[in-house]
Length: 118
Image 1 (spheres, helix red, strand yellow):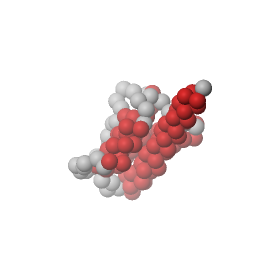
Image 2 (cartoon, helix red, strand yellow):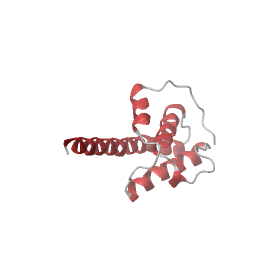
Image 3 (cartoon, helix red, strand yellow):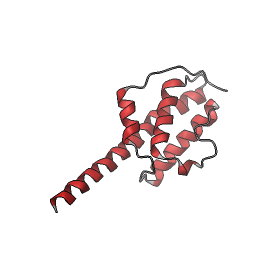
Image 4 (cartoon, one colour):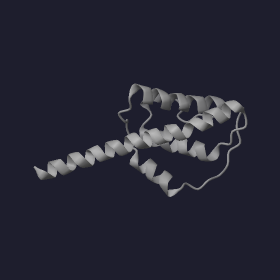
């Protein structure tokens, strides 16, 4: 069942999360990667949407992935219990991607500061 979609204007925090995420992979643990990809697959299945046609889930870069999840979170309106369950998992996946992206950003800044000291 395809869910209704609503319009939205991205919030500054959402824009920053997308910009912070790299346009490449993040070093997720196996459990974190499985959670994020299962969330993506569940949303696609329950809402009848496709985020990345023709791309294997493991090859999706962090930036387009978090952008797509945020867009779905803000525009999809769950109708069924299955949709509500999938919809309810999206914020956790979004925060997980943002947390790892922030951690990587901080590590890179720390490495840069140490290199400047040398």
